[in-house]
Amino acid sequence: MVIIKNNFRLFLQNYFVVIFCFFYLNTKAQNQFGLTTGNYAGLYSLQINPANICFQPVTYEFNVLGADVYINNNDFFTPATFVPKLGFNHNFNRLRFDNHKFTTDSFKPGNLLLIRDFQPNAYVFGGVNVLGPSFLFAISRKTSLAITTAFKTHLSVTNMNTISATSVFEGLTYSPIRYQQIKMENTKVSFGSWAELGFSYAHVINDNYKYTYRLGFTVKALFGIAGGYIYDNGYNGWNDDGNKLIFDSSNFSYAYSGPSTSKNFKNTSNSSVSLNGIGSCFDIGYSVQKNAAAGTRYCPNLYQYGNNTKVYDWKAGISLLDIGAIQYFKNSLATNIINGSLNWNKFDTIAKYDISVMDATLRSYVGAEKTQTFNSFWLILPSAISLQYDYNLNAIFYVNATIVQRITLAKMPSLSRMNTVAIIPRYENEKLTICLPFILNEYKDINLGLAIRYKYVTIGTDRFGETFGLQNLYGANLYFAYKYSFINRKIFWKKLF
Image (cartoon, rainbow, N blue to C red):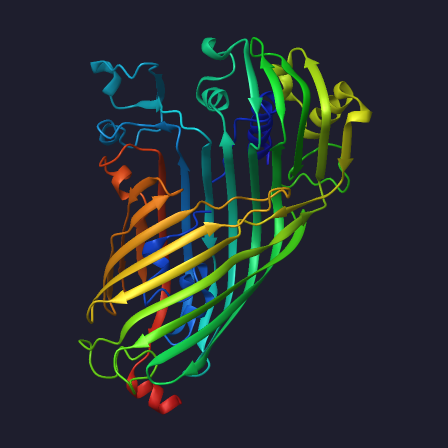
């Protein structure tokens, strides 16, 4: 609890100065293309389209554990030539190079070299996904059910400006940004941590020999652990010497729910993991499959006529993901600043305060007539719409194309999902899958991925090129899954159905 509390204080300390332009990250990777898009994805296919769990090779599946860690930004990077030299030394010394000039000493192991490459409307996306004990089972050839448990943490920062990005790396006492005006508009910072209990159902709604149509949905109960946001609706500030918070005629909102020892919170809990909110969400998906030969309709045709038979020509799908929200009502506060002005000296000492004390102090400086306060708030999940297309070249080679486009409500506090386009060639049979995703994040940043599944174990990354020094390192991603799958056979389906 102490670690989480202290880190969140650091998070707030920096963001308050430039409408909270710095972040602390307890890192939801959102795609896992090497794990979610194949014919043997099973439970993990729920993350991209819930219709995909029926009329597919997996009859029964028990997921033991799966995890995904992810962070991505477009402002700071380590050059590709330096990545192999990082090794696994955790005692990094940060190096700063304003003009990207390096010396021999710069490339010694143990030095973490970060370069600024400022982009307009900078972003950060990061998080952790853990899929716990979960079950998938087919109740007939055309119908499947799933029960899932998961824990997720997600952070998103969008529309961050240059001075804000600089302060992330250098701090507000960095000379080039001291005594600089800070104007921001539509900067959004959101984070959330919650547990999920989900129920999924998928059914073949039409099967006319040539085409097979599937519909699926997932409903989830959400249990909020921590969450918050900082929304800028027009911030006009000034960075003095790094120890003052100065702004004038500014509008912004912030909220927090989570661990705290403050008596100012109602129903205060000292526990780092406690129920602070409740919510719900749903996914819904539809897909159509063009069968390779009329009459080969058995689920999913992969073993009806031998392993070398082409089963389908193509599959296409559309889905809505994470449509819902969490209401945080315990250990919670929310504040709106309306046309407020402030000159807070010695603000750099704020880290020693509790979050509720910081909030009360800020409101007292701004004035009651310029503030609105609440004891609860809503946080919308990282919702998205997705399109998928899977083309079967032959019995073992496939090419998948997937688009994930975030859905946001401009005036509502929400987590933002990263926009993604992916082309995913893969080799696939019952025991082995190899995927090589080519990924375009935010429709401009290219990444290369790699994932390998052997029987029950999958390990992969959507950032293989960065991890191995083939690309400049802007982020990191690693995911794995360990699950038991029962693959159907013709004899099994004949006996059971």
